[in-house]
Length: 251
Image (cartoon, rainbow, N blue to C red):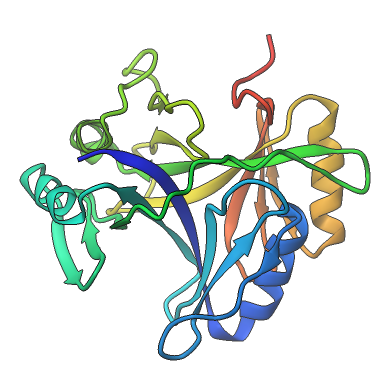
């Protein structure tokens, strides 16, 4: 079993779906595919270059995000995930699972995506790229969850595993890096959740914050290395001080 691509799904509530979709289209310079699914609840954000890795879904219990892993063997990947501690929730051509810590993800068929889209240059001069999914892991679950995701994807833990923020080594060309965050002991969450990270380094980050606010996002909190934002659908995400070209912090 091999992970060949990854897709972030933005699961947005019905009443805020149009506003949320319009926002993410604007900040990623994408256009919306034709709707899919029995109720037209699914769609893809199609980039002007490269292959899509962002999709949207109308979801009554949103907002949230989930992850699709594109694999060369769906049945084998699902069996491997269960062997590693995941729980199978639903099966058709794809399989819906929950990680040991409760984060929902899917294994889906490889459809040939290999070309990572370029960063986006915004109207205020900011340069940014959606490129990371951060799993927010309650402290008691962190060791098992990190081991699970590294074993399932085959992506090694990069750097010091004792730190609060630990990335998995992303293969060349993969559009999404996984960052595994250990939540503080005072955090009340009992299951793993996730949020999207957008890379925007240096002065560009302030420009990108302003661009996102222009499009309807709200600033939740500012920190030295990231800015916490909320989109018009209520989804929390972060603008982080990383290069949109390399995905790492400038030296």
